[in-house]
Picture 1 (cartoon, helix red, strand yellow):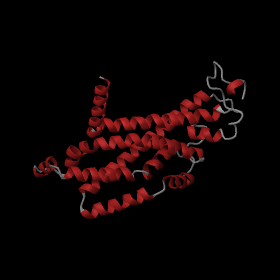
Picture 2 (cartoon, helix red, strand yellow; picture 1 turned 30 degrees about the horizontal axis):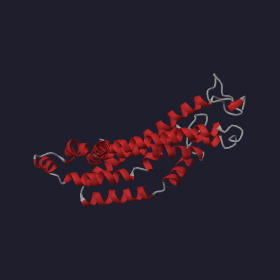
Picture 3 (spheres, rainbow, N blue to C red; picture 1 turned 180 degrees about the horizontal axis):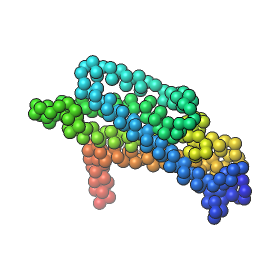
Picture 4 (tube, rainbow, N blue to C red; picture 1 turned 90 degrees about the vertical axis):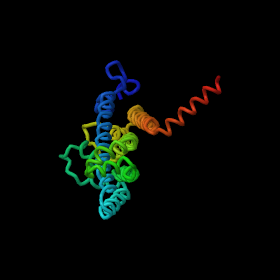
Length: 251
């Protein structure tokens, strides 16, 4: 490293990489865009497949429900990291790597949300307003679009908010193992891999991406918990009761 603190200066706020001289702040910010983009895209794929499969299993015939439920069980039983490592290792490097990582994560890890959607749809299917829509002559998919999807929106949004930090961690792990985002495109996991050689001479080279990953995952996890509380009437009611009791105790 050039200068103290890895070459940190007014020109390079967080210093530069050893040997290459690339600005760490620029790579950290660009790596955030890559990691968050991959995580969000993977979450969208997971939610889309999970909602379609879950609703189809709940509204289909008994045979359709059995087939889709067993297929979902197979997906849930798959070890995510091992399958992702195997798939990413055999795909040609000419394919856009961030898109590929997002697709692999999304196509392997949609099983849990499909189970949640199926259970919620089965609960809503027996309610009076759904039966009234069926008696009025509405088709199955119209009922699903107009009556059931709004009812399952809250648990789906809550689970999706918790999937984003989990997918960031998976993307970082895949890049750390060398099968995720490839150089020169930076990602936090890739920066951690490169820092393995230089962490003694330039510890900030390791601490900066690790700290950014930790803070981002923690913040998104807290956000997901807040979304769950806001969308769950029972949790919100308990929160209001607890706040009211604290105010009474202070008074």
